[in-house]
Amino acid sequence: MFLRLISIVSVAMIVFELPPTAPIALLADPLLTARGVDVYMLRLEQTDAVLSGNKPFKLFPNLDVARSIGQGTVLSFGGAWSNHIHALAEAGRRFGFRTIGVIRGDDGMTPTNTLIFAKSCGMTLVPVSRQDYRRRHTQEYIEELRQTHGDFYLIPEGGGNLEGVAGCQKLAQVIHRSLEGRRIDEIVLACGTGTTLAGLVSGLHQHLETAKPFVRGIAVLKGAGFLNADIRGWLYRLGANMVADSWTLETDFHCGGYGRCPPALMQFMKEFEYTHGILLDPVYTGKLMYAVYQRIELGLYKPGAQILVIHTGGLQGRAQGL
Image (cartoon, rainbow, N blue to C red):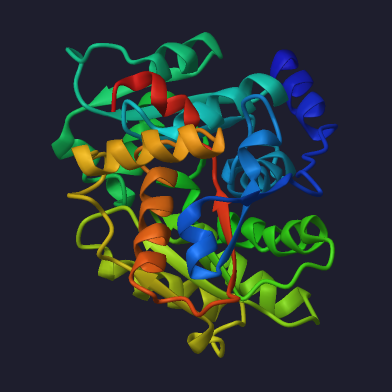
């Protein structure tokens, strides 16, 4: 009991600081010049050695809630290559939380670098069958996990809850400060759960008085149309449901499905990285840039368009052979 009180007190002293700004890169290559389109990249992957990208925006508000209720254990879900599990494990190590990762798979899976890293951070890994993993949204399964592992604060897969969305509202301020007065017509980002997109749209319309750019999400899941309802639901709960004409979700650039990286995508990534010296991951940012370049080639942006793409990190996945 005494040790648990010490743990709670130490966690209560933590200040979860999000990056105030991020580096901005202007991309330059013949296609962009020929089309007369300026593409900037917000490089969130450079804001921290491990806890970078959009993950802190979704994790830190959840950890703040856990701290406020005196809960020192956090449980979440993810696959064997999950950026979310990787980031949560590091956050637990850094801020003194006990973390539990329920991993889609079984006891016979070969450990990935992500899982090896998570375990090195002190995360308890719980491999479960795909059948059990599909039960992760049910209260019955959550209670089974509590009976087995003790009480915990639950963060949904990918940080996809209202706290995560509210945290991503602060991306609007990071973008505004980082742009330093540059005009932007459209912001484009990759979407797995829609959490970051919903938070960004809400943040732009609730916290910025300047002209607000259109937000375009690039879904990395096959058949991701269902995310539209999730995004609208979060916007409604945040009081930003009136901004329906300020965002859209593109569902045709998944390249075969989540985690799929066909030869055309791999070739594009190699050429992009050679030209710009910026690494991409095949699950999120590779598909993001592939989609943006296809849209530019199709003439879907007028000459003079100013586009900002968000590099949401996830480069640890490049070591996984995806």
